[in-house]
View: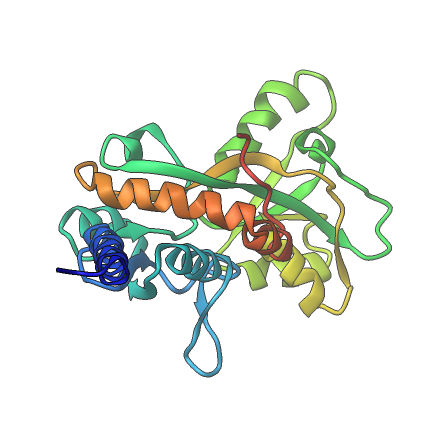
Length: 265
């Protein structure tokens, strides 16, 4: 006959094994949360000098994995291929600075985790102090080629600036953010628009020769964690892990460090 102590020990062991199997069931590889991301987009994700994956998304992934009792592992994937890779089972989730859009939600489930958007920069000492897109009427504005904001500023120019006699926004596109900044410092443009986290990094790297003038996000959008539609265990585990990260303060610390804003509850 088993003693009460033995029964208690067996009960604890069974509970432990049940919890472990529940955690493992939430990821394709036991003990590992595989996260797809394109690791070339600071401050969201990039490689440091030692080839470590750093940025807001890796930090969030580590926080979520810890809450799930697993380790985070990153799968470097070109951004246009991320959703296909997710649905092919190459990783458990995508956390890669990916905005939530209806088109993407048709392909996978989403968990909103942060709001971001653009910031406006001007040279230090400039008489200009643009806070909102409308303040850019009549100015020469530089952006990285292909960003979603190019169309928005051109529409703003034609729909608002010109009809209200405020002057058109002259939009110049450049192959990279550093080239936009160089144009700004050379006074070939009057303002630069870049994603907020990168804008603050640019200000730091120019030793204050460029400053962020806007106080609030310009054209804000919501970032999401993406999970396969049929991976309910993974989805529920990540929802719970995100709640735990918020409760223990890690979530807030990550967002603050990278100039991101929390999503509305």
